[in-house]
Length: 526
Image (cartoon, rainbow, N blue to C red; front, side):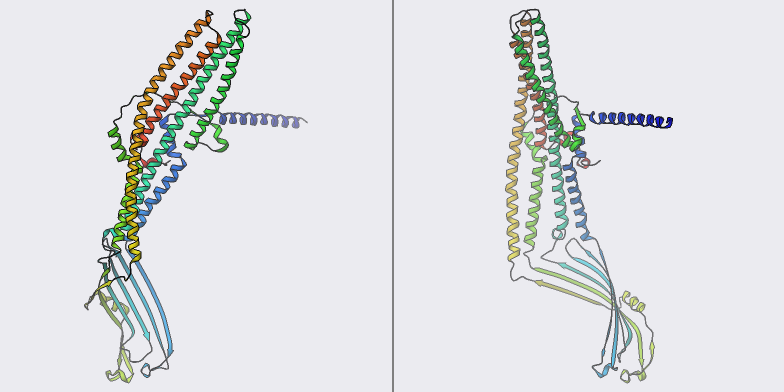
């Protein structure tokens, strides 16, 4: 019995410890809060945002495509071996046997190298070996080795470094386009982070304003109740105050919902949590919107945008790509004229047969002088014989409808890209101009809303003093409180809009990375 009681006590104690630990863990998860500055939020997004990570993979793929394209200029080694046996009945008396058998073996090794002008240079080393029972052979087995140098060069069509390096050039252009696309994506993400961050700041500050307004109404309600109790005010006066408290409590609920929505938006951009975990993390933005007057020269801003905007860079690269395709298409209309040059050195060896009376027609072999494959190899390396060939091959297509169609398509695509560039430049200039004007407008708005908030504070102070001496009613005090809350919210929004306008200007200028000294190499890297 004692053991059972003891075991029960231990079980209950362990359960309490586990329950307490689980509660503390759950509380820790629920209360997990991350304090972030704007720069920290941007850095986190550039490291963890899923869209950016996917774009980084695309850029890495484009980089590998360059390496793959360069392999065309790497030397290639080709090795081959063949063996055959041919057995068939004799069809000619000179074959000397009812059934003759011929065995052959071939070996070849070849190294080829493509050169920048489009030609191909190769060195081949080959051996051909035969062994037969046919009569009247001079060597049997017979070894024929050959060392051959060959060069083939297109002189018209497919001539030149641009044509021969077209895969590399296209791969590099695609890489530069992918890099510009990554930069464009980074600029978008930076602005999204700034927008989400400042919207969260605005939502939290607006919630504080609403809470302050609610507290003022509650204080006013408590004060009114006391004054009614001592007969200083009529009982009906409490209705206005109670209505104001209820209204501001409802505004608190809406403000809290706005905070949660803004917080979730920032979490998604930062890739902090998903699903049920989304609510387990709280973000505390540590920065407050400030008014920092800036002066922007429109002409200088337009020039900066032309040099830095990734969308303009992408289209410029696209134009280069289309111009290159146009040049390739023109080259493909030329006739095919190929130069082929070869030089080779043979080496021949084998068992040399000796016939009676040095007459092979007797068919009687009385001896042999041994030879070997090595001897044929050695002779081929000595260049004992002078063999060469030079050939020109001209190929003129009877119809070139496809090539001319490709040229027309390439010309159209080039003109299309050039026209699109002008449209993009006009759009970019319009965006820059609007961003500059927006900053000027919002700077004036910030000052105006600041003055309005100060007047609202002074009015509330005046209405509160008048109420204390019975010169006004709760209605006008509550109205002054509400206007002050609205003025504070409007000033906060104006400050946030001004800071977002500065961020927008950096985005349309394409200078967000340079301003923050961020390298594309850092994007997506843990």
